[in-house]
Length: 455
View 1: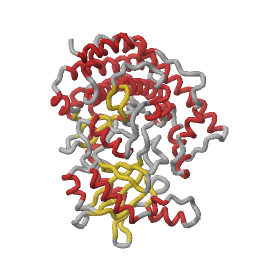
View 2: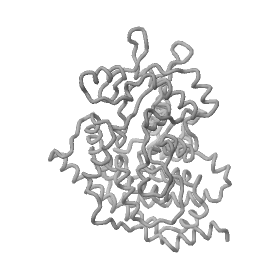
View 3: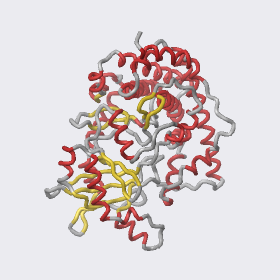
View 4: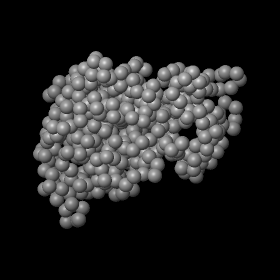
């Protein structure tokens, strides 16, 4: 018996599968209003009401925007002591389509703002609870959701066992391409799947340039569409009227230095490509749910030929929401943490990924659109949700297997039907907690304690 197998067996003895059902939150758990307002610190003040508005669309969007809350709750759950590179926010909406460097369309985890090293169980618990919450918003019955979570858990387990038997190189090269996934989609759902993939293939950086820029005064510049898109020129003009200043918007000279630092973080061949571009415009862009209020920008780059443009996204990176609950060393640059975590977990990553810092704030860079696409979950059927949950679980297992002791994890998970049942119970219970948090926050909004603004 190998040391890795023994490690998995010891973990199973210490943390039986049935223990996954436990949800024992402390009586002094922070109330959701305090948690929401605490997470606003450091954000652009004028965007905070928009963040609240987006988060309070329903209980699932609240869940999506509050990874830090669940991280604290997860810290109270038993763990095996086996760690992996985590997504940190592995809910069903953080999986999707994007372009691999060879321009194949692949499906993978696609959000890494919270990535860090930690217990692999935390990602799996967050994924399964998200299945319940997303399904509830679609009106799917509790019985069907229990079935979907069990299928999700089982797929993670069986996939990890399969991966534990693969050689390292085969595992590293394995990926889920859209063409392969289509063959697994029931015939009734292929038309919708084709619609999603066709849309993704057309969502490129070039299309972003066409949609998000305009000609003015003989030059190409980013459009103004406040509050979601505010170019630097508009923001500076607005500040002159007395709005609170945020100096990062006004540091155009710093943009050049930031771009040079970013290029230095990229691979040598990517550096060579980027040397043929220079930044010509800069705009604040509101994105996501929990990210609203963080400094997120679009950067328009001009190439050496007329009409050759590239649109990049510069996104602020702060410490992972999981960091306060884990004993991990601090990172020199949080953008570097995000990029390196993404490269470790994804089968193929955007070659333009890189990191930089501006005036003491950390950022990472990527293409704004690179064939990104997502499966719509708001009107999914019970069978559709179950299939999608299984797909996400298989991807998550592969992502974890790249950095975890996959033989130990597989040993722990093998013959884990009891864990599937326990995890279904936990997920339903945790979804109830989120529903209750949402009800409290919704009342706080009605009482004027929380300000919201559509945007």
